[in-house]
Length: 499
View 1: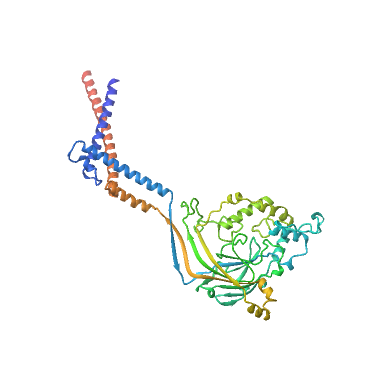
View 2: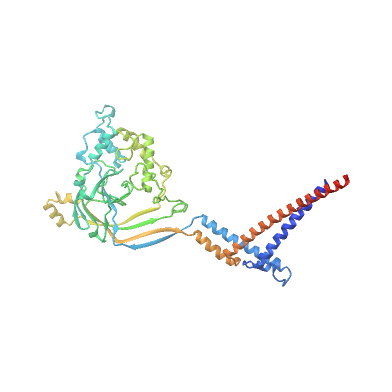
């Protein structure tokens, strides 16, 4: 038994000794030919005491310094930092924005039916409701002949009572040529009401080749103030929105106000943003939504016919909240849900909308798109017409009176200030190629090494592993051969004794 233990111990020592000898030979050969500075000094001449130890410490210290520097670089890369470039490019032609014009009055007075429930409804929808109490002639709803109006009928009324294109848009010019307003404007139903959009066809976008007022859009608008009734706002005039043709507009929260009696000049500048998609943080601590990705599917359901925007996403989210609370949508709201009746709108929808809080907005998960186009307006204005011109227009029956002209007419000119397209482009601050270049620089600084030096280390490791395996196999085979020879000699001795 003791003999077997001693034999196994001897075999283990021989294995370790053989492996160590093999590895030592490889290391000795490598140190004589390594391209990493300092490795050759480990076997260099002994100029002073402990020289080998000094170079070993230096070598490991530099290797640790290289490791720390590279760790910092990868930590920096993991933060996905970005750099923003500003590019400006002049063009011969720029796509003209879509222009949506909304009358601040939603309901044309002569087309509002003589119905108490409708009168109450449009008053409840207006901002005036928060300031005064409407005298409803003390008619109790339960005994009112109208009682209630179904949602579909409310929507039909709202569409029919809107200002009509041919009534509101009197004269239109595009690039200094008069055009039929009905040919270049189309009806757009927004959450604010019925509006009219120029250049709203995304498949046939009009472009502009000349800056200045003569190269843009000119519209003469009659807001028809004598036909104003209760509306969402109590101001007079129009809302003007500049946007991409494929985007939905929200006049309630966006756009320029233009009052009556003005000649308004809106000079615009076009700018675009191209931001980096996840994992990069395009907006500080938040990421953007890559709408240009081939795999992108719009999360919008109610506005699925339009391009994704953060505003459309937020409006859809809030609409979902209101529909969930009331079980129906307002008559101008998008979607396929049941339309609220007049009483449902007054008793639930309007109250629920007024109770929305910032928490509801913050709970809407609506990232900014990575690709955006903005139109920045510069607004200036003067009186619509001088007294002399106003008198001439009345004389030619363009308007009923000079007073009507000043209280209802708006001249709107929208044009490019210059054909300069400003682009904001994000690019990675650190890439894998940058890391590779930094790695090469640090390897040269700390160790005087290159990628070929790394190849030498890999080669050495492979050779060491192969040498150890070879030694182990050889040591295992030798005892087996010796054991067979011993057994053979024992058998011969036994035969001789028996004879």
